[in-house]
Image (cartoon, rainbow, N blue to C red; front, top):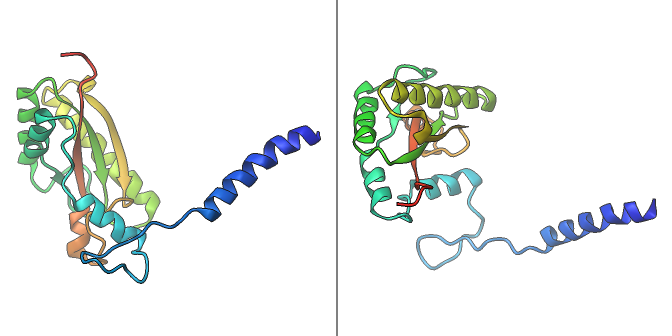
Length: 180
């Protein structure tokens, strides 16, 4: 019994000590002077996700990021994008580049509760996935349709103009797993 207890207690003690002794990240402003406080979680992620995605996988990823665009939605709607031609244009580009694989990420504004927004963003991602499949995109090319809800906003302000920027479906490049 004591042996089992020590097998549980030692890892807990080690992990909690490491967390307590960990040094917090050094946050810096745009200049050289450090912030007096760490930025809020939301503002950190907004800044992080606004940066252009790095091109890690070469020219195919760069072409994907330049050509496949987000699909925006109105408030509480998952099946009628603001610009239906965006889905058509994305589908056409994906048809022309049949080797491209990708993720579909659904988002929602932060003006509702988390559960509702996750459900809404899941329905948006699934709707876009089914729309692409109906337009001739093979389902095997879609790695995953993921709902993010309000977890990674592109804008953190608490007003309608900002919330509307977060109601979208975003596409993310996935490298091909087969050798070329």
